[in-house]
Length: 461
Image 1 (tube, one colour):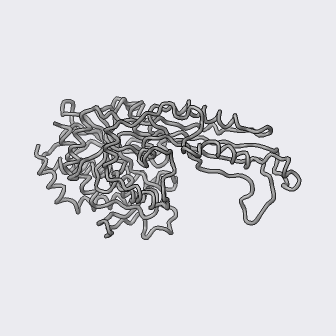
Image 2 (cartoon, one colour):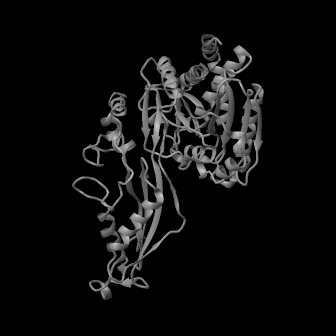
Image 3 (cartoon, rainbow, N blue to C red):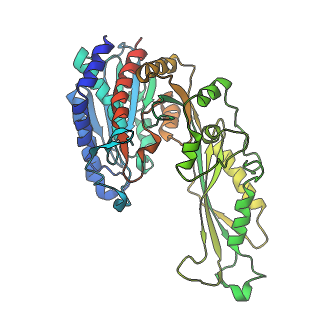
């Protein structure tokens, strides 16, 4: 099949493709807010109709929450079988007053880095999702068919914790099995540098309350002899870290952590990442993680323990002279390599409990949540084929990168479907996803479509 003709079709149809995306972006599919349930449903219907318009057998599948969209094209024997995943739900838009325009009235805007598509969901994940759909549309228009067998799987709950995802995968595992999952919900390591994520950090969440006296106490009556839970909590939080090395000081915390292969480090060192810009853009003058590791290693390949919230006592206007009866803490750990979230939870809790003073007690939250890191199987030939395709499109060597965040669906594809994932995205770090004035570069959208066409062609060889 001719790839050049497909690429030319993508170029000539770009304006129409952008118009289609704009229409999709106008649907306020906010999954976290029950007030938008009808609009989330509308977005699912829009996708079904769009896939059907290019000859894909697609339908909306109901769940206890928001619907899934599933589509199939091709038959057994039509080359490799890929499953493409994206999500059509979006984040809430608050605070609305910080937007420069209606979040669901998307528009093209000129910026110093080129033209962008401004609107909620433009980058996360409607614009990214549509790069693949538009690539398939162009293939179908030129050849009347697609280069391989494809299952389309679009979720409507990614931004609200995916409560229906695992039950849906388990109930439909035979239908959804494929040779490889393609995921377009990631970014490029730096502008213009095509990237394939090779690893994702896992996540562990926990929350605890330090309890001291049975009621809040007058600090004049009990200040001195009284145990103050906020002071107790401050002491424990400080003990989580080694100030000299920047390492987490919880015993056994680094079990399962592995060194990054030398070749991978070489790619990271030459991927165009600007450390100074990355740090200064949020007001930092230097990195504050583990000493002896680069900023990218700290972000992608090292585990962390972060304090996400501390509170207790009086927080109103003015002063209230109390020793509070309780103090609260929320923490998260980012996991790498073979770190076990359940074992790590036990270690963190032991660290806290071993350091409690007499008359201090700890109560742990039992809404447990944790997932291990995901490491992609780069030995599969599809990864090098895709890297070559991306390098050709962007006229620059594509790189295998890490990711500091977590994408739980990748782990679920592995554990439920036995499916390896390839993560390719075209977003930029300044896209302001989850924030006011979200945007997606027109270049990312255009070259993203062309990139998927090249990848599909490379996977079929």
